[in-house]
Image (cartoon, rainbow, N blue to C red):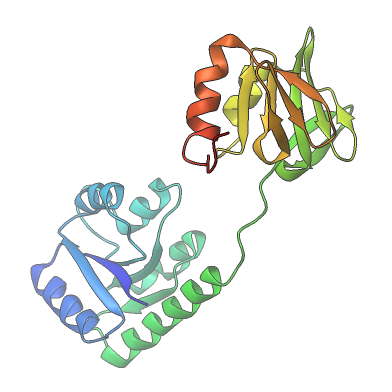
Length: 237
């Protein structure tokens, strides 16, 4: 494992010291060194960063403000000369809070915490995709894999699943927009189908695992061929 690390400090001497200490650890890959939080923000927008080793008190924007501004910040180790910032740091949940002058063994200990956190995240299996619909005064969770197809209706959509049917009030276009990934295929102005539920594709309709026949819209034939058939066809009769 290599931990991609960005160093942020407005003091050039401290950037050199932190960089030297960080690079001494074989699991650290220093991918950048920034003189300000604003510069670091730009780097974070362009690079995949695992760890931020960051000063707190800097011109224009503090290290705390930088972390607060990020929707999904990387792990962070704060390094500062100001002990009083310790309480403020709790709100952004840093891995560690170190005081200058920097103690090398203490930084190694902080980096080990980072390594353990990243390993724990890597070992967590990804959540099975799902979405919620509102039904009366509650929310119903529907797993993607349980959905066979979705049909547009006058006042909303009908979601046909292996366990039951649901009729939330929203448009099929809005639901298609919200569904993540490439799991569902629009085959008709009024129909979305789960790609794994498809058994057969005929000239004018698609047959699903429950034997339901779904019409194919003329404007969607090309998309079906391109995104579901081409590249998967092995034998042509």
